[in-house]
Image (cartoon, rainbow, N blue to C red):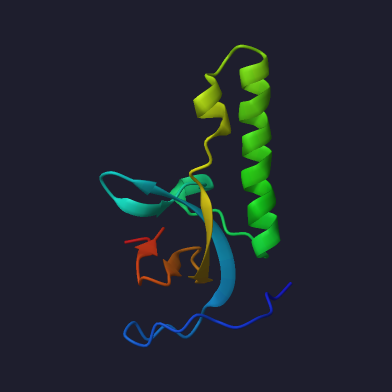
Length: 108
């Protein structure tokens, strides 16, 4: 099923064979903003809609809250949400480019 909607434009990268998608990112101390949810072979997990990605973040939050209730996680850790959704260009090989021009999941 094709993904409809506006594409991101990375004029300096010249990408043509991409489609729009959404990934869940997290900011890391070493690498900065990176996709936090991956599939097989380390490819970023791409969601068709922004709401689908947001629901995945909420699902993860609910899991952490249940772990707190069960005594398996600290309160602050359970309620802290560091993930956020980023619109990306998705290529046929499953790699992505975000609006900052970062390329993830690229095969050599």
